[in-house]
Image (cartoon, rainbow, N blue to C red):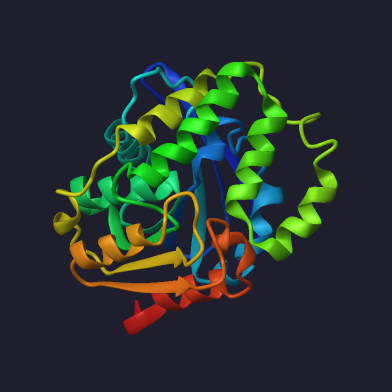
Length: 271
C-alpha cells in the first residue's frame, strides 16, 4: 500500500517531537503546520492526514512534524527551526523539500537560511517574514482568548479571519457546537507558539535562502496580509510567487489545485 502511514516521535531536549509519515518515495517532503499545532499535535493522526497528499506518494515520502510536546514559554522561531533540523538529522531524512504553512512557514524560512543543508526546495504558504501589525492584531486576539480559556471564541475568530465568505457560510452552521470539542487541558503550548510569532523577524535572513522557493499567498489574507508574500518575493533570491486573489489565510485548504501546484514546483527541472 503506497500510503505506508506511520506515527512516530523523536526525543529532543528531554521531551518528544511527534511526526507522521506516509508514502514510499525516495525523496523527502517535510511539512510544518501552523499555529493550530499549539492546540493539538499530529500524534497518532497519520491515516487522517495522509489523504490530501496521495499524489506525492510515488515519488516522495511525506513527513509532517509538530513542534516539541513540551514547549517552554520564550521558545523562539529560531529555536523551533533548530529543533526541526535536529529531528531531521536523527531520522536520517537528509536534504528534503520543505513546506511551511503560516507559522510553519516562519520556521521553514529560518530552517532554509540557517540550515541550508536540510532544504532542497522551499514552499512558504500564507506566511510572513516578521510580526507585522496585521500579524500582531490577529495573534494578539488569539492570545487573549487562550488566556481566558475561551475555546469557542478562539475557534470562531480563527475561522472568521481565515476562510472565504463561501466557506464561512458552511462553517457558521457549526458555531453553536464548535467549542465543545478539541479544547486542550492547558493553553501553555499554544501560548508559547503564539508568543514566538510575535517575536519573529527574519527580514535579514531571507537573502541567505539559496534554494528554489515558491511563495503562495491569499489575496484576501486577513491574518498575515498579502503584502508579506510580496515582501518575501522581493527579498528571497530565486523565488517565485503565486497569489490566490479571492482566497484568504486558508488558501492551502480551500484551493483545489494547491497540492498539485506544490507538486509541480517540486518536480520542475527534473528534480
